Length: 63
Image 1: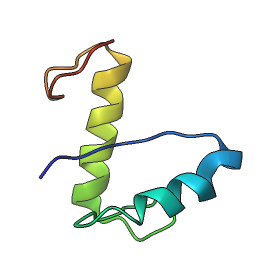
Image 2: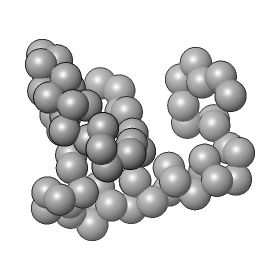
Image 3: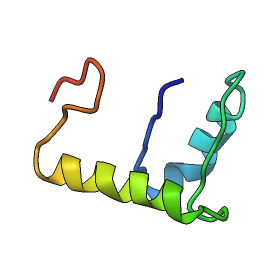
Image 4: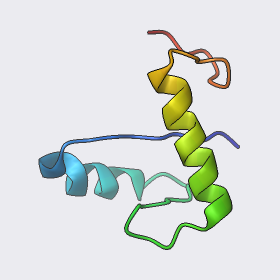
């Protein structure tokens, strides 16, 4: 399984969520959902890595 983290504009949110919900075998974690502490730690680490330009954990990432 792969993880995809998206940051989108508020006005595009519903359209993106509608599209993603059509993808089979897709689990959606929404910040409005209850995110446990382990999941939040992974999300925060990913944000920190991106801010520091560290893309080692990302597969086939091109900046």
